[in-house]
Image (tube, rainbow over all chains, first blue to last red; front, side):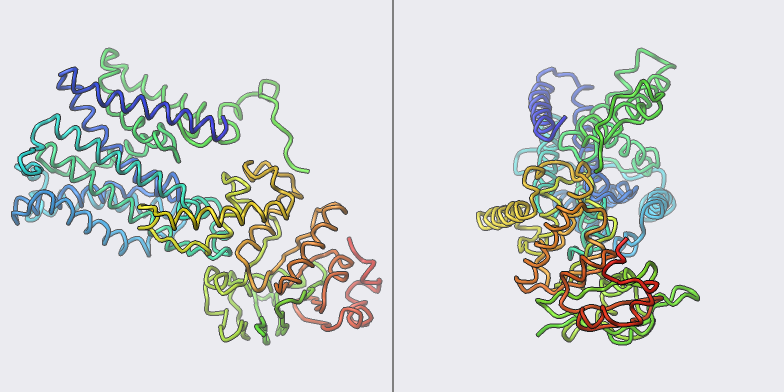
Length: 330
Length: 258
């Protein structure tokens, strides 16, 4: 599949998503509406990870930390300080941006496994902190009664309105990703992901671009975190559990790193998985993990990710069963 | 005239002295050859100039800047570009994109301009992409423009590597064995390109094992052995230098290639 074929496929999937988003409210199914409100929120977090990991190649588990800043920021600023929910959402995003700038510089000097370990610790620490800091966060009980967003007379308390809002925000995040990735900034990210030293010899300030990816990702994740809390009007430590971190990673890896529509598809599949597999009862997890294993073996780059050489499955086969590979080299 | 000057530069790796009190200068518009047997310290010298290694003693000056204090990307932005011995491509990027990455510093558009693209931003991109296409044509890579850089032949990779480095319009280009693994046709083509860069005013430090190749191109020549500079100056004079002949085991250096 070449670049043009991949672009056509992505455009087709995008059209399917748009049609699907328009149809869901017409079904009047509350479950469907719930799932497809959660999907764009998680898709935004996956897009933020797609910038940091899928494009700039930095293995980061920090996305839930920025979601937590958005979520707790919105909840605390509205319930304790009486902020307008929009202002709280914006202020939390600015806080996430500032946090990313401050912790990003030292953190992103680490490479590969070290960065992964450090950000994993950050994710664990975030969860522990919001559980333990009871005076501020109400510990494991969490904060409820977060007021809903509204514009004039249009209240986003209404589930269909909120559903539309989430998809608009998700579409904006997709547009930001698309604009960035095709620009010289996106190219610098992709360059430093594969050759940090080469990028530096071409005058690219590698640390600056890593921090930029991290910070843009932080803002998007924070906005998603705020939206989630606005939706359920509740925030608690479970929303930033380490399982959520892994879910977000899975969503990206299933959807495809470096893809435009992949994050939405990945988020939708993982959000719907429990219902899709509900009929299987206790075999649910087994079937899900078999699906994952097959996916990783056959499409290592994810459903819509950039195509790599050959899948691991091919590597595992005995030589005579493998596809003949084009001769490379002189 | 801007000049890159190494003054008494020493680099040690543990007990090994990789470069010992080396002094040499590269001027813009001149080709400076640097030859020597394996392990002589040639690549270490390039690593020191480009900021990947820090000297233990001595200074590396470019105009008024002491390069020993700067990060590799800052050195690149001053106009010093380099190639790598293994000619690694930016994998996953097309040949065209590889060259565009080399033109990164030409972009003036910031984050805001990228997110709200105005016509001037689009003009800038179009102009730079046009320049990249021209550069690919100069290097004979236009047919491969959209191919993933990993799918190039070894010779094409070498040309891409040089194209990417020259794309940032450097004052000084450090070439680390650019001719290694090239066939005679490719070698002649590379030589013509290098002469062209010189005529455009680029100064080059040309490191290669292929002594005749370097000898035919350079205006000045330096020979290193075991980390020390054993001869430097006019290529013909260096060629006749007894110390150089000894370093190449008494053979005629021009005939000692490979």
